[in-house]
Image: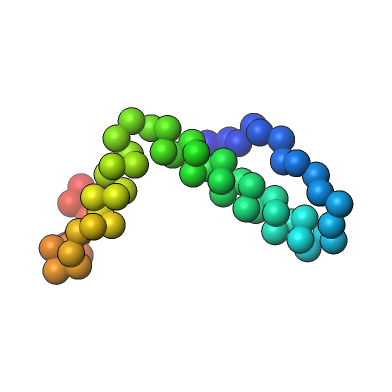
Length: 60
């Protein structure tokens, strides 16, 4: 997946600008992932699953 959105520029120090860029890209990635039908619900279901119900094998 390639993010094509422009990263906004900020009048800040280089480190805070880099941090802001990382945060911006993370937000864009999250928006992309939750736009996939059913993925949001699947993630929420997985987060609600009790640890005792999990397998050490991936199942694929």
